[in-house]
Structure formats: C-alpha cells, structure tokens
Length: 133
Image 1 (cartoon, rainbow, N blue to C red):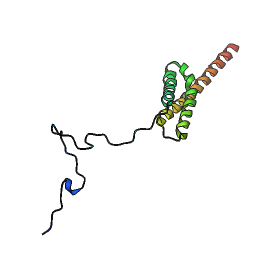
Image 2 (image 1 turned 120 degrees about the vertical axis):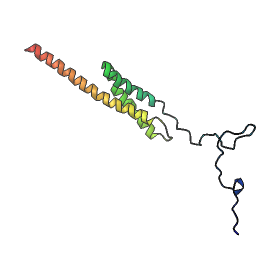
Image 3 (image 1 turned 180 degrees about the vertical axis):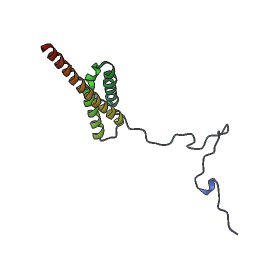
Image 4 (image 1 turned 60 degrees about the vertical axis):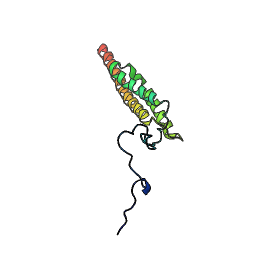
C-alpha cells in the first residue's frame, strides 16, 4: 500500500495565506498584509520638475500670449542639462522623463519662437516696402 505524503505546515512547503479576516485575539501570520518588498524608487533629480515646468510655461504661455515663448531656449538648455546629469550620475536618479519632456517642449517652443520672429521680420519688411512705394 502506498503512503500519502504529509500535508500542511509539517510538509515544509509553502502554504498560501489564509483568506479573510484574522480572528480576534490572534496575530496574523508573518508577512500578512505587508506590501511587496520592492526596492524604494531612486531619489529624484532636484531640477527635473523645474525643467518640465519651464517647458510647460514656454508652450502653454506661448500659445496664449507669445511672450513666454522667449523662455523656450532656456527650457531646452535646462532640460538638456538635467538629462545629461541624470544619465551621467553614478547613482540612479529619477525624473528622467520629466527632464526629457521639458527639453522637448523647449525645442518645440524654440522652433515656434523662430517662426514667430521670422514672421515679425517679414511683416516689418513688408511695411517698409509698402511705405517706400
């Protein structure tokens, strides 16, 4: 006749945690209700959010008033610097996506600023030509 292998905690195998509430007066099993032991996120670069904010100010403000487009090159430069610092850091740093977004918004805003300045120069040139004739 074959023997049945032992079951339960005496078997030495992993047992699933009990479901439902823990009865009053009893302590929950070890690890019950604890979060997974994931490592904490790396510290964020202190200027990552600032690069994102400069990019948002440049684009959102530039679309409404055109004057904040003047900060677009600064957002581009600032975002590029933060991205470079995060990538060259010996320890892992968070905030890379915010810095890249600020850099991209600075690039887009700088292109819009260039188009706006070119349009302004053309308008002034047309005004001067129309006055001369």
